[in-house]
Length: 406
Image (cartoon, rainbow, N blue to C red; front, side, top):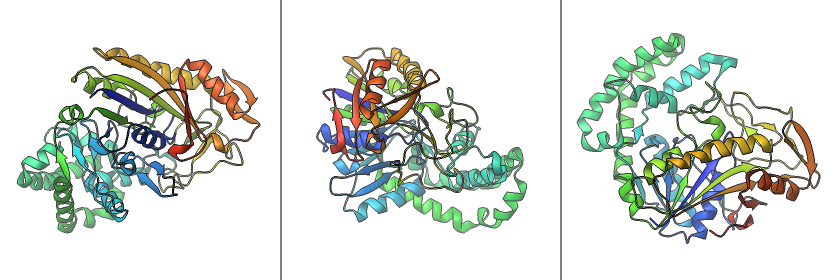
């Protein structure tokens, strides 16, 4: 690997990471480029719009897929065979057959993790944490308990053991977890489905399909075979498991830390770290949002991906706080000090959704309201971060203007 780019969400997710990943994959030539998912799992929703108007929301595959890039699910990715199979079918319907590799250490989500997630969020009522219901936290929690960890490598090397493990999870882990969470009433409502053999057998078939389609290989081996890699993050810095507002966080490192760990196991490469932000703030799900507005901040704001969700509710809005953005990015970028060596390290900021702003736009800085044009907002971001900028005036890769040579 000679060149690595990292795309990181600077806020609460939904900042344009799919757009930037697609842009970088196309800029580097598409075919032969590798997109590596380095955190989170299938709860991502990264939208890519092609020049001819085609649109796909990437969840389990790299957002460079339409540009011809391969996908790597690294050791830090949480694999969900159910979502993988569904999305692969969607891509095959578009005539796309992506090459996918998965590290043997990647955790695997079972249907019981997803069901527990749904049950606990339902039982919380108005006090929901904002989960999308795909079992990310439940997968990590189960995996931390001795005797219940399931990885892609385990699944590949021991099919009979996986079947035994799945039934042990159903018989022992689920009731234990239900008791811990105090969700007995929800459990009883779904007990017949949870205990059915049909659910277990259908998931084992889906898992087998996943293992046939995804090559189980060490992530560093796959990374080393590609000259150019785009590391695609999920969620955002404000949802980081150690830096976000607990419990409204995700169970992963959403910044550059995971990438630094893997790069330290490889020869040095040029590294561009790009932090994506919309020109305004959004949050989908429960938790604090400083300066939250009752309505969308500008009449031109739209979002076709983040529709109202059973657990997350509607998309929430605030003006972009440039100073808070600076602080989050600076804190995360310091983690690049973990790198043993690099041939070149650069920081960039991608400001997306600029086409949705009126000429008289607004943002905040150090608690003060600021007004100006969209270009003025880009200048404010640039001056606060001393970073090179990608400015996105639309939803396609062709709508991005870059002042940085990539």
